[in-house]
Image 1 (tube, rainbow, N blue to C red):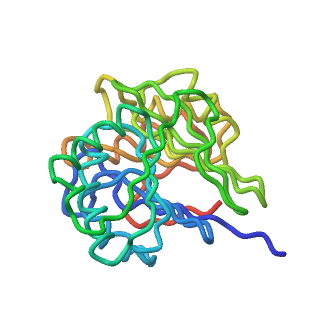
Image 2 (image 1 turned 90 degrees about the vertical axis):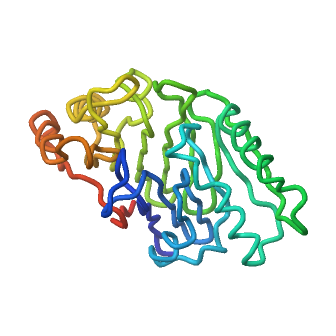
Length: 254
């Protein structure tokens, strides 16, 4: 059997959305496993624009409960229901994030909706290397990172090729982030700037250097208030491998 690649497609890439960049969320396409990672405001249209069937999603991973990462969850679930989804839909994430999502849905009285799909909340402990979900192509592990609230980063390994893609989610510099990113082929690292709980372009580059990552992709960057080009150059001055800014609907194969 030939090796099969997995693809991670950012559906949004900015710290603050603008006309060209949605808030950060993404979809993993790994054969018969298709998982949304965080959820912005228009998941059905963005997943479809990425070339995937929205109703084929196998679940959602939420990295933390800040609103820019979960505000689209009610419309995600509503649209799946309207399009005929009736089976279980798993949502993985830290316990606090799942509790917030539960409260969001209670505001919409979702248990009164006829034949609503079953939402299966699966708590991810804040333990390095916690298995999340896998298939014959890819395995996903959750690792705690250093944000303002309980947050997980994700380490995705192609089990056929051994290639690794890491997404830090929102985080400041921390030894745990370096361990999460160790020897990653692609490190997708936030670069919000000088804000508590976040990273600068230089922070992302130092993490990439210490982790021995091969390629650095900056995400959650300041497209509205700030200069993404300056963030990119800041990282390039430190990390000598390939560095780029993620753009909505880029494709990262691993």
